[in-house]
Image (cartoon, rainbow, N blue to C red; front, side, top):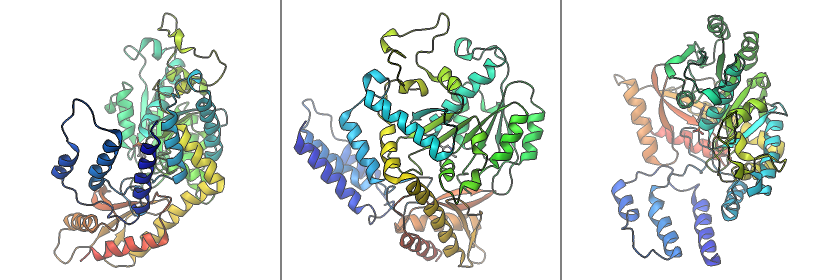
Length: 468
Ligand SMILES: *Cc1c(COP(=O)(O)O)cnc(C)c1O
């Protein structure tokens, strides 16, 4: 390998990271000029590697968003801890296939260790199955596939062998505020989204236990309940202990979508928001959001490892099923990563998670999530001090939803959109629009390890200045 190329690349990356805090967060970009720089003719004979990297970096730069920076508050986007970026680079250089043990014993062991750390930190059952996937969407797919397997197996149906046609009906129940990716996961698994019964939620978006009990009362047979911790708008968590007790009483499977909210379990001051979490059957989360590792990194956890493996193992061999002896599954007595995820060949996705957890330690993870929540509350307080601003949610986690009173006679929704546009154009920070309980709002998600009090104050000032 060309050392000069590695050094040139390290320099480009270091320069980007050194400037990411100060560059305009979401600069207006012109698609035509981006294309002009990047849409070069594909040559016959190729281009020297250093030139490719140099021109790639220069051409992409105007179209990069400072999402890893300290004042990006759109969607739910974590940054990437330097140690996790470093581990990710090393992982790319090693180019290990984390599919099976035989392909990379080191990566298999790292994955296993990381899995046990994650279970420990989040207070989940020590024997649970853990799969390192691309994001919470695929974590939801993985968990719900295990739920589908287990609930159908209990009524004598082998879904891996016989599929869904002719299978007993599986009842699906989710809160009215379930994330869209839950529906995407259910579609992939062969459940039409129309099959989902939704349960009413309170004004913060939390599932109402009594409504869940009523929904469960009307279901006979295999049933899966899908709860949420961490609503993308309000940050609210379903009352998971109560939800778990009711679900259990009815003999149903409880899945928890905790893409970012699950990390509340790692913060002693936040843990009460997810009390009873360990009573669920499966949990989906992201590491690329609140744990601040590079994309793409999600984690699927399933309390019953047998159900997990049965739903995911590449080498699922029922009688007469396909076999792939060359994969040497189980021969080594060690853990094969591909038994726990939909993919076979895959990058060593656990590596940056391992590095982040090892670097932060228990207290570091707790500080990261608790600091983000404290900063979200600070931001809410700062903007709410202006009488034209209304904070719409209880800021108990890291999300803030705000609305602005327009000048007399102005249209409220149009005014919120106008303010958001001015904030984005200004470039001090980035926040997007949402619709929360029937009205347009600006939403901010504080999810980055590098955000400071000063960043929050600058952000509040930029938002208030955009009110005109
Ligand atoms: C972000 C998010 C998802 C989807 O996660 P990806 O990592 O984008 O696949 C699912 N559920 C919730 C609550 C989320 O916030």
